[in-house]
Image (cartoon, rainbow, N blue to C red; front, side):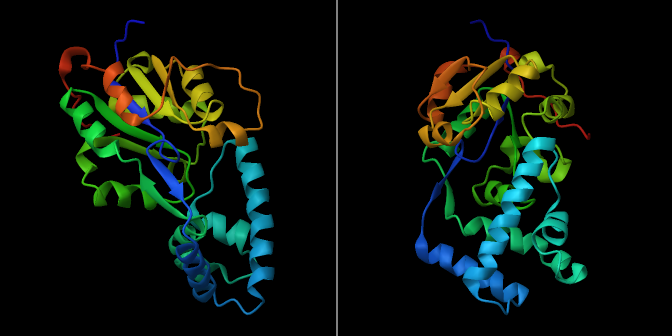
Length: 253
């Protein structure tokens, strides 16, 4: 397949970063969350209630492809019985702690070197991710020294649109000033990631082999990727050089 790719967009969860279970870290997150809220009921009862509300929210968001902001998530969905002003003030912290209950998220070992090399080869790199947090991904990019590598960073919690809605993909291409056909997308989900990129008419769609994602996907798989890779560094074999070998200038949306 002949590629005319100028921009490569990435998913984050299970694509650039993977989840590692750390019981002490997870327990600490639970304790900090309950302390931050001032929970008086039994811990098990409290989290059982929150898990049910979380499931309802996820069902709604996947159906409508609309993501709530952190403030709306906690004041309207997760903790509506608490004073809205108090919960809104700590909603960002609550989101981070809620996610930390699942474990610690670390980049794959070959991510940073691959990202830096793709930039050197002239590609514009960006992020399109479904996430409830507004700060976790930017913080990771800062901590790993990759701020200059990713533009734009499109988060569903910020733009209110969830994959596979084509609008979120087309927004990223429009911000960068490239045609969808000049974009590639890399993700781990054969439904959410591949379908969305295909419907957006991206020039190339790449799936990283993540068996757990496929096993947990309940929807019928309709769209196939152009490539399936086992590690992020495999991208260097697919994208030897950007078309024209010039990175686009960052523009204000």
